Length: 115
Image 1 (cartoon, rainbow, N blue to C red):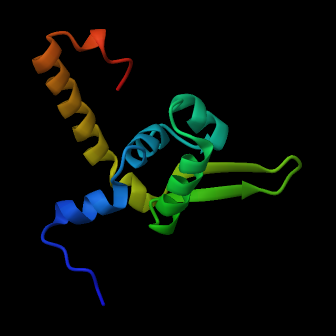
Image 2 (image 1 turned 30 degrees about the vertical axis):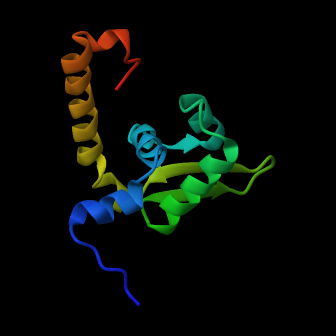
């Protein structure tokens, strides 16, 4: 039986929902990343959760997993063409978050490292 949705936001949140997927995608907007690079950029994520989230994003066609057949093995992740279409949404999220911090704190630089 097909799942029924009430609006597009439900679908979007199902695909990129949770704490980490949007952050992973945000970091991939600047180019290919290895797993260890993503771990450094997202220090609070566990290896298990990162791997799970990457697999789900790959399954949904949002990212590509690139395996280089060399020793030691090298794997990189990048946004797919489909995933690149989400970049403007991520940028909008980032800008809204910055404006929200300005509203709440007056000076986002006190609480925001980068965006």
